[in-house]
Every structure is written in C-alpha cells, then in structure tokens.
Image (tube, rainbow, N blue to C red; front, side, top):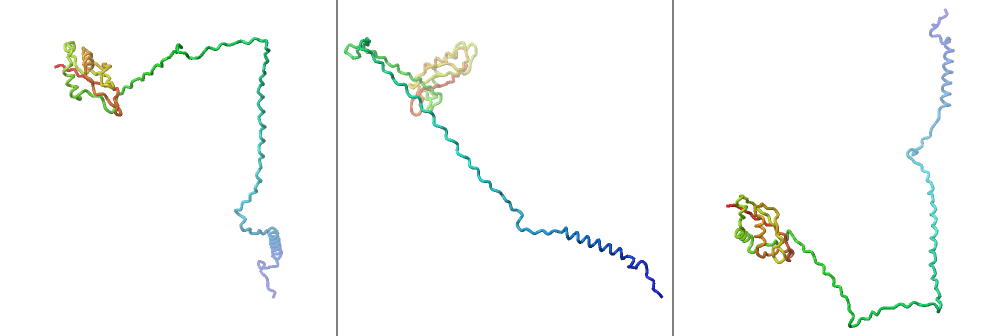
Length: 220
C-alpha cells in the first residue's frame, strides 16, 4: 500500500519558489558587495587648519620730489658815472657843537602818580583813640539831636562811611543810609570833627581803610 503525502508538506511543489528566493538573495548579496566601500580612518585630520601664506607685497618707496628751483639772482647795482661838468648840490650841515651860550631845552618827565589803594578789610582795622568805648562816649557827648527830628519824632540809625588814611585822619565822610530830619547831616558833622584815629595796618604797614560807622539817634 503506497503512502500518501500531505500536499501541504510536499517540498516538490515549492521547489520553484525556493529556487526563486535563493536567486533573489544571491543577487542582493552581489549588489551589496559591489556597493560596499571602505574608508580609511585618518587620525588627526580633524582640527587642522591649512593656511596659504601670501608673500608680503613690497611697496616701492615714493619718489623724492625734485628740489625747488634756485632763487632768482639779485639785481645788480648799476653805477651811474657822473661827468665832471655836472653841478653838485652842496648840503649845509648845522653846527651841532655845544657852546656855553647854547640853550638846551629840557623836558621834564611828568611823575606818574600812583592811585591810592583803599582797603575795606585789613589785618588790623583802624580804631578810635582809646578804643570802642571811648568812641561811644565821644558820640554821646558831641551829637546834638536836631530840633526838626525832635518835633517830628524821628529816631533810628544813620550809617556813615568814611576813610581813615595812612596818617589816621578822617576824610570823605558821607551817609550810606539815613533817617532824615537833620540827623544825617549831624552824623556827618560829628564824624568829620573826630580826632585822629589809629590807622589800619596790612602786613605791618599803615594803609588807607574804608570804615562804616552806625550812629543811633534815640529820643528820650
């Protein structure tokens, strides 16, 4: 009795398929073998910079400018020959000899007058003889209250400015700020009649100083 083969496991039936698959695999391996390339590993090729050095261009020196042309020659002096027959003009020269009777005009040079410097603040200010206390006594004793100011009831402070020169003398007294009623004129009068002050000093030398003095007028 002949054994029957299962058609599903019959290899004879699939022989053509296997042959076709084997042929495709062989063809694929051949193609891969032809396309495969090998690369040699280059060590140290990365990170290297190659620079082509250019030769430095040599700039030729600039041409030296030509020297300036020489200056024109100086004009020659032409000597004119005068004939002996030509008249020569004689020039009279005054006698400059100084004799005893010769009058000499002497011009006197005007002396330059130095302008006096007036200080407002110095190292040692001028002062009334005996000091400030004596100054107040002098003012209280010599000031006469004007009748006009008394009748009008005027009182206040009169500011007087004056100059104390190098000798301590009082000059150029005038009112800076007054109150009227005759008080301004009385204050100037008393200041002008003051005795000689002790002059102010700057660096040990007596100097002229501008001085301001307040004088108070008070009704009693």
